[in-house]
Length: 151
Length: 129
Image 1 (cartoon, each protein chain N blue to C red):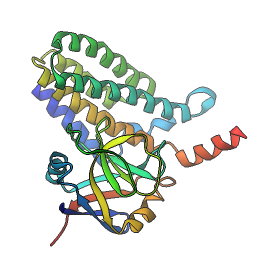
Image 2 (image 1 turned 180 degrees about the vertical axis):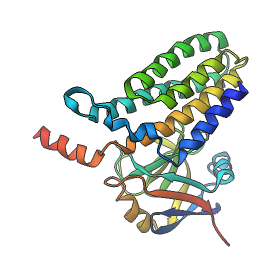
Image 3 (image 1 turned 45 degrees about the horizontal axis):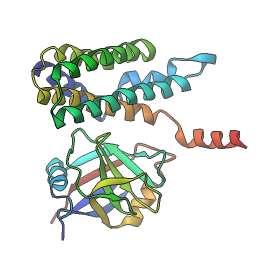
Image 4 (image 1 turned 135 degrees about the vertical axis):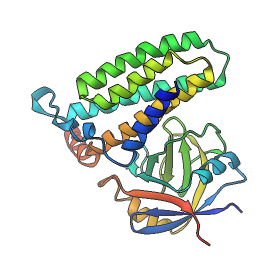
């Protein structure tokens, strides 16, 4: 698990102040009617769903009194689903790789504490990714257009 | 009286007071992590709030309060430092570890631009003697 942790932390440090190339390219992935807005918006949503899950699971693990095997059984397929979505839908190859490192490391997790550390580091990485994606969304203009559409 | 820290945002330098009595553990973690630099994003539901993510957790839920103008809080669900820079309607109580006490107007000038132009650099750092 230590190797996976080191890799996830290094991946996070690499994107903390520098926009990831896969985020820079995101809006070029066109969705319906040749527009990239839905790609960016949906990528943010998919990052957020996993971040929320990870933070809640980390909280449950830190409270204790739960069964580690069940926690792992719930977490592994949820991570695998999102890894596939990140890679296939949004061409987030690096992020998919990071999530898969975490999946592999789950097999080595022996305690709830270790689970919380691993899941926490993944959450921090994904959190930073999501805020990079958020910067791609022109919220001010989007809000103006939305309000015009309501009238 | 809590310790003072410096906040740099855009072209402005501001002062914040750590609430060491109300949130001792949170202040200890924040102080230990200084300097902290992030890129500001504007909140989408709460008006007059900017925030940035940090690469660590604060699990202590000290000093949860309904945010007021000048409050600096930590949103544990997203490892995010939040700055409530003017009157607004908050979504609920947030663990609050500091308050902007000097040049709030300058902070507001810069933070107000973040809605249109996100990514403004904010740095929290120790106050130089």
